[in-house]
Length: 180
Length: 325
Ligand SMILES: C[S@@+](CC[C@H](N)C(=O)[O-])C[C@H]1O[C@@H](n2cnc3c(N)ncnc32)[C@H](O)[C@@H]1O
Image 1: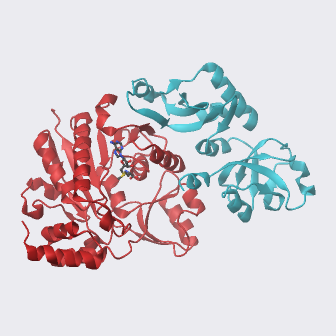
Image 2 (image 1 turned 180 degrees about the vertical axis):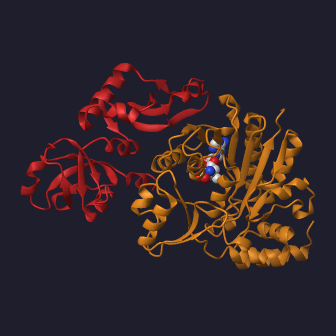
Image 3 (image 1 turned 60 degrees about the vertical axis):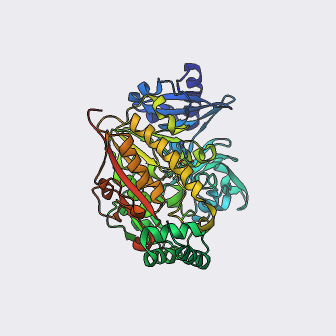
């Protein structure tokens, strides 16, 4: 298992999914001067962004060493579905308007892996639709993770306060839960 | 050779503090009884928690003001740019948003001092030969402002997960994580400018944090560690670029894993020399532990001692490889 230049077919899948989820041209903007490389996994493929200067290091034979990650982890492609990594979320957040701002209590429970209920919603763009991926931010605009809207945003006002609004896909509490 | 009387006295002290007798015999031989008792007493005291502020995530002032606002009391460690003694009062340090977002890393003062003793320059090639859970890789990445490359190697499968997690949490993007045995470092064909070898050790400096260490390791365990440390050091010196710098550290107070290991290295590998660490901390390492005369340059290495510095016991040594080798 060693890092490889990305396969153009797979990269097209990744780019299309990022751009359709978060806005046209977002992939190009987060890529900047970096080069995408991939690492095959037991299940699927992981994608990383690295400086072009690294390619000479990555070209070598790693012999008994197994590369596990490198540069900036962009996300994983499993069975045709691409999932952005936590570190990549912060970068994408700057370029997208898929944002859901939640209250202090909502933020806290989200970082414990829970989903977002109506009572925690502080602000959301009304044009967002059910199924769309949204960045969960606290009231000071810090990215806490990613969720999938379970209802069209314009309908949220009509929901009871304990109803599910967005299902937790990944949150920054994962860093800590993973260690314990 | 120690006499029957000294052996009995060591047994008595060992019983009182709950240690294996061979450990006390060594402490008394190393320091004399009075200092040995000071060491044992210090190991009964808790160690103050410390954190390193991660400048890859936020400027120092911002993290300081956020944590202070949450009731965390912070006191700067004089020789460290980003190291603070932190009293979280009743808060769990892992539970704060600032921790999840990688604004700080909970790390002992000696551990922070290790990366500071190497201080890799931006844009350089660095190898961290024993990297998990990533305290020093993430520290070096912030010193290098995510430039250059840090090859972070870890052998243990489970521990690589915590290494990766900390790298991502702290916003490190200049690291390549490899799983493997660093004793085979030469197979990678790299010639790093800097190597950090925070070696696997017997942990004899961590008794205050883990009292089970008072009885869990034998002299054979310490020798086993020393043999592995020799092999890791050899691999480090072989790989290091001519003129390159290595920092060797352990969280052990055992001269058998520190001064003796470095003295052997200097004999085996004449292209190496111990050089000063240009920061003020700890005490000089021992040039004649247990009365055995070792290379005098060992006084350039430094030790942290629980009974002198109220921190974990640590050994830190900076070594250079000759330009022309
Ligand atoms: C003292 S800990 C390192 C702590 C780390 N430097 C930090 O600051 O977070 C030593 C590590 O070396 C790893 N290790 C032991 N033998 C190794 C080898 N031959 N090659 C690579 N890693 C090894 C251990 O699994 C352990 O995680």
